[in-house]
Length: 387
Image (cartoon, rainbow, N blue to C red; front, side, top):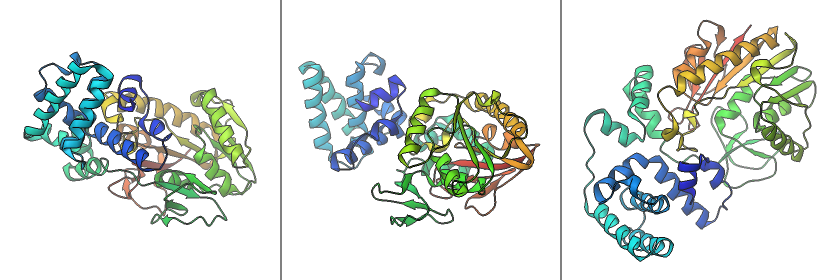
């Protein structure tokens, strides 16, 4: 079951769900999986009150089914009677008649009971689908109101979006303020699946034909394609990533679009390039990923309080290395799909950094912030940093 693979095997929900079709069955599975993962803490709290056994004593596959049914019963919009009956039948078939009876008792208890959300920070965190420390960290940085707006918007499904390649007239609804970012219904030739915030990163780089450009953490290659299109295939564009498997996959992806660029397998902190080689360096830094909660809701259950600080230490090292590689009159585009200050404003503080011009969103320190509550996109921080 997808929920179990995500929670116990470290899989990403968007990757697993991306293999499903766009028909009714695929849409139903996405709704159930994303709903359960977004509200997992809240669902588990309901199940704990309804179950005669501790949750960690319930067989994992059975617990997965109870979690999905519990979400559908109390927080989804399906028929409660069907949710109970179908789940009990599935449990009995997979785990035996006795387990089916247990599932029936638990779900009937969930159905009857009124949810009791505690007052104060714990209750607010439950309603926002985030650990209390995440709510507190964002509230300290932004204030209670914007922290709540971001987390509430992150509980909503993300629209299907793409970047329209040059010369392509494939339809779609234009995303305000981000050229070529469109909301689409289906895949089409010339459309590159991307979140609008990622398209904004490419525009912030603004490479010109004839430049020498490095995409420093390039896989899976969507931003590399955008740089290539802006350069009109002229100049030198190098893509690097530290993982051979990801490089191979990205190379194949670009080749399918008729794009060939040199790829290098390298650790960004020790990239094998001479100092001052590039006009632009794009550093889409590895991060906690908090900005992508709409598409990968399991992130909220994987982060711990030290995650942003640990990520920030690596990001500083990568930015230092990137600044060494850029020409004196060039700049590094620092981007991170997160909103924690430790990974965004703190990383570029005290540097020659400024926000990119012309994008929707709002200023954040020496950079710019996009987010589901601001731009209908993933959360993304972008800053132009000069050596």
